[in-house]
Image 1 (cartoon, helix red, strand yellow):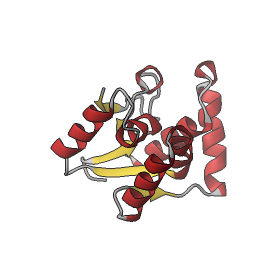
Image 2 (image 1 turned 135 degrees about the vertical axis):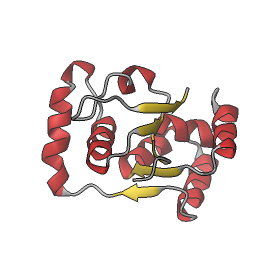
Image 3 (image 1 turned 30 degrees about the vertical axis):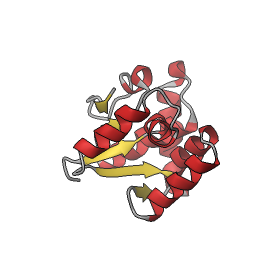
Image 4 (image 1 turned 180 degrees about the vertical axis):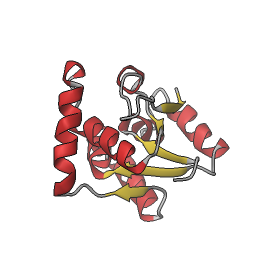
Amino acid sequence: MSNTATWIDTGFLVALFACNDSHHSQAKQFLEKNPQLDMHSIWPVIVETCFFLNNDGKQALLQWLERGAIVMHEITPQHLPLIAQTLDNYQDLEPDFTDAVLVTMADLRKIRQILTVDVRDFSVYRFKDGTAFKRLWI
């Protein structure tokens, strides 16, 4: 993967598409200043994001995705044992499914950067080699 490959988590997308979010302006400015980012995510992030958005925000997110703004990674049944292991490894944090999938897929795809507001958990999560995520925002 390129060194511009970056995971996009729910909090960043909520900030980007919810005009009333306290981080909305920051999220927009960050993307404007970093057009080279090769953004990646998973469908559980999109589902989780839509939960927090009004209809206009959901429509804008879907149009953005349709234009190919983010590379979406599929989860297959073969990933489930690895995701279950991630849930087990971080049971003290009680990670949600979305975080467990992101951590698992990040390790598989060797993408180490992330855009997230979840500083607490993404400061703890580690790759199999012991390295931490590099948070690019917040």
